[in-house]
Amino acid sequence: MTTSIQFWDFEVWEFLVALAGLFLAMLIANGLRRTIPFLKKSLIPSSVIGGFLILAFIGIFRAISGKTPFNTATMEMLTYHGLGLGVVAMTFQNADRRSGKEARRDVFNSSLITVSTYLLQGVVGLCITIVLFYLLGSWAQSGILLPMGYGQGPGQAFNWGTTYMNNYGFEHGSSFGLSVAACGFIAASIGGVIYLNLASRKGKKRSANAEEQEDLTAAVITTRGEIPLSESLDKLTVQFALVFTAYGLAYLMMLGLSALCDLGGGFFVNTVKPLIWGFNFLFGMLAATIIKSYFKIGKKAGFVHRSYTNDFLLTRISGLMFDLMVVASIASIDLSAFRYREFWIPLLLICIAGGVISYFYVRFISRKFFAGYADEQFLVMYGMLTGTVSTGLILLREVDPLFKTPAANNVIYQNLWSILLGAPMLLLMGVVAQSMQMTFLTLGILIALLGLMLVLLFRSKIFRKKQKTAE
Image (cartoon, rainbow, N blue to C red; front, side, top):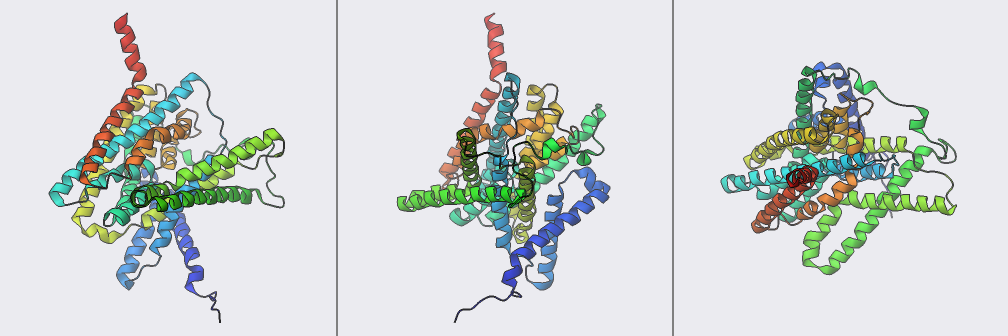
């Protein structure tokens, strides 16, 4: 006799109840943000506020009942997949690239700033936690999660925190990574507000209603040659189908490579396999690029007659996934970990140091290389390098609500260069925790890579100085 679940069983509703709780928290947070002046001026995204509301609710509920209202595994799953699905949706978009030598230079420089900030955060974070390892017995490699939480966001911070927890004995590793990411959003908001106030004193006006200004012309929503909004299959359904198909293809890629690692044994299982599953978003990008290439080839060959992707809807999907990722990531933080000084002391020190160092470094570089829109470039880069791209765009809209400066394009188009230039650092994430010798070796390599990025960044100024000396 086979058993079947009943509709009133909690297992039928568990995932949907969790989603309902997350969305309700975001709605409440959005209402609070629009009505409470302090929250509105703070520029903290509604998803971040919603995450802290859920976290507070979980803490109160657990204190009263001894139980948790949401399955932590569900929140962690949404964090992990939210990053991958959001990146896939972004990859499918077909925004026009800026052309011209100056535009390409600004995009490349933006990628160098991005990667050099990751490296700087990694160096600062590791230096602090290595010292704390000898003083307090804290986990020596936890500082490497600073660029993952600040630069990469909650998804990567959770991925690597969990990897270190499961494979290298970093107790509460996932909560540590998620806490770093949560602090990153706070650092982005505090730094952004400070900078905006300083800029306003110098005559740079903030937009009073930046969030209400939308450029929603017909050309933005749809373009000629696309499939209709609604026929036998709804246009939004097609976008979700493409995103999830690409993500499914990414899963098959990771599954195949993971099987090869199992055949390789020891080293590959312990080092390469976690690396593969930690980079789910990269495989998602690859899968989406393959599908995009198929459509492109199909159009040239004549067997694909319409455009199936729509940038407007894909942007909405990526926004949805990133909002879910953020609110779920904060809700996943285990508050009991804060009882241990080995947890909260390194967390507090690396987050404060990371926010301060990132602020002054990005401000200095933006003024050096982006004449004419240094304020806009700083806000979008600093917001992105302490929170997410969405955080950067929120800060940017305060001074450039319609994205008239190249700043928004710079952070969008620099992604490919950032992945290529940042690949060595990402590979080091898989070896830094293997031993203290590897930790010190990783620190040395990060410093060397940071020097290389700075040489590349200042290449034009160095070249001009040499020319003047020769003359």
